Length: 562
Image (cartoon, rainbow, N blue to C red):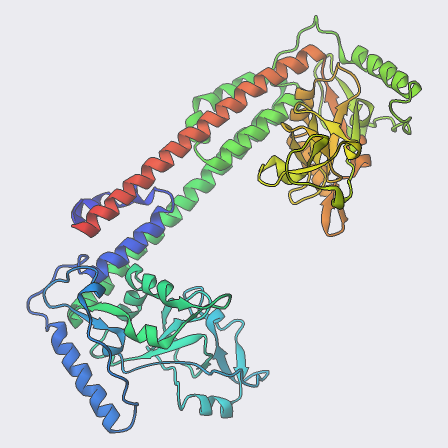
């Protein structure tokens, strides 16, 4: 790919994952390779610039305005990453600057007001931000600037924390700096300020900054390494042409970034509108609204956020009775509830469960929407037994399988099988199987609905155990994930020992719509199909993302290798 083709496909490449950021980096890299603008044989070559800078430094040393720096080692072939155009020169950063130093090495006495005292936090975002800066007295400032005096059009460079960020001093005020910042002074008539900023922020020099940042924790980029950075120097006129071209392309990147952000915002809004239309629509309009969504399906669900929203919509429609048609031959939920009530009484009588306090009748204020014929409103605690976990003593834990031991399941085990814990069988008093529905009581995130493991479970988990076989565990698994219950339970969960905890009383009292057993099975089958469809959509989206990622990687390789 040549440069003309690159510019012609700029917008396509920007569409790749993190594409605009990669384009910004590529622009800077092409700039410092001499590939972004044409060379002009009439330009005074960089070798002459170097001679002028060398002569000026010698004069400043003679006049005792700067100290004579130690001679730097000549640049070796191993340090040169690529060939430069005619008229350019490889130089060390110290060769083209008059002074590279850093700020105060000791924390000064701060004052309520006075002279701003900048540290790395004040330019880490890529611009000078005085909003939260500290202040020092004029007297302290005068002492500090004898060694390090930041002035308009000098360059600041972060050397602690996030190192290697260069920023032109574009504010014409007096200030001092802390040791976390380096200061670069140079002849602005020989080196264009904004080219030097661009150069230091390019991937070429960023890589050197990262490689030479030393220490553990509060990492530091030492001055010695900054001075030794090997960098490309073009003629002065070309420096100006490069900066102008980069500014044009960065502005275009801004426009593309804003366009992408707005497009994504509109798509998410479209997804939310479609969801609300389905959920709030009247029964007679549902089919037409669903048809309209199907006609625009690929557009609406072309972002990960909207596919996530689609999953939530599927679950919400499922528990509202809008996902599958009702069958008048199904045994109604009212009869199902009578059978569950009878079964619960029997379990209490047989001492298999404790008799619980009767839950209050459901009021009109608690009913969020109308249910289909054959469904009934019911409190979860009347159809599901929520069984809290048990915490075996830690001194009984082992971390390998052994006869006479049962696996102790914790919330983390549903994400990773890396840290398995086992306890003696006599402590495994909360058994559960792979098809049981489990609730993560503590977070973040709180109220996770989990299944697929077996063993005994600890206090961070709770089992949702249907009182009767007339409640499908698969239906319960989807029911507990639907947006309404998730939103309310999470919002009302109490704070316990610094964690958000799900209270049994809260979910016991929660009001849900209950369909017949046959409809539960039909709903589960439909939800399974639609969730598989969502999986396929996400896979297609991922494949598209990977394709665009490879496209921009190929373009970058071809341009840099050309």
